[in-house]
Amino acid sequence: MNYNVSLQEMKLFLMTTRFCSFSEVARREDMTPSSVSRKMAQLEQKVGAKLLHRHTRALSLTEEGQAFARQCADILQQYERTVGQIEQRADTPRGTIRISAPVAFGRRHIAPYLAELLERYPLLRVELLQTDTFIDPAAESIDLLIRIGVSQDSSLKMKTFGQQRFLMAASPEYLHRHGEPATPGDLTQHNCLVFKGRHGLQRWFIGRDRPQPYDVSGTLYSNNADSLVQSAVDGAGLVVFPSWLIGDALKSGQLRPVMTDYAVSTSIEQQAIAALYLETDRLATKVRVVIDFLAQKYGSPCYWDTV
Image 1 (cartoon, rainbow, N blue to C red):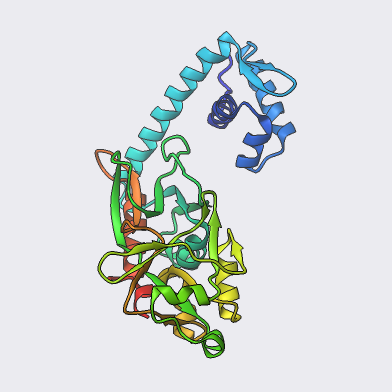
Image 2 (image 1 turned 90 degrees about the horizontal axis):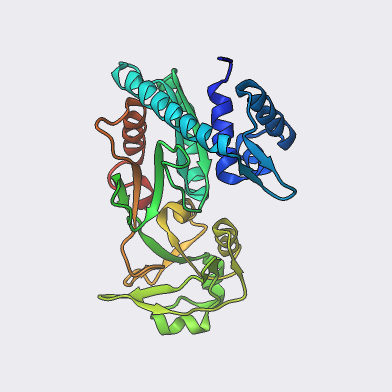
């Protein structure tokens, strides 16, 4: 019996069974497809059985591969539980913590603090995965999700940093040329720079007591919020974005808030900025210290809301 099968090989094999593509596994693990294929061939040689059917456009499991995949999953889960228990008992946070965060928020409000975090906890390693798409923390082995929105997954524990606050803003130059809107009806006379995502143009909700949806229009739409913010700073029009995104531009005077006597948002539901993590008997030390560290950095209220 060959005992040289590594945990990494098991992980790569399970990823291959999930994505049915050497290229996708290679992309996620920063490898080349040929190196993943070679690893799988070596694994088959070690276990003495064909584990994968290699088709022209896809991969599938042999009967032996299905049995081996079940055993690999059990072994890796047991390994992760054991390591997690050791880390929990340790006085000093250690090991790798995988964090998933939205792209723009991660760049502005997580990445700038990572050097200090790692200096404070030298045995800690961070893997920051920035994406705006849904992540299943169990399937992707994510320890900590930083998410903005309405929480819908009751299986996750949540630590709320703050509520997302939206502002309507434009540059002083734009307001000097076009005037300042005083009511929602005035927006038809203004150039509105609108985020366009997978579900189409983002709607603006505006009101004093009960915000109502408004379909606004303009000469620039984008699926990149930073591009719209920069265009607003350059005098192109009005934007509605959260304070964590445009707070610096407001503090510097590059943007000015408008219609401040109205509540504005891009959703009728209140959205929270929160840390989410899988429910366990005891929160891992490495996860707890990162949550506490970010909560300390953000403050209460969050520093981006002190504009």
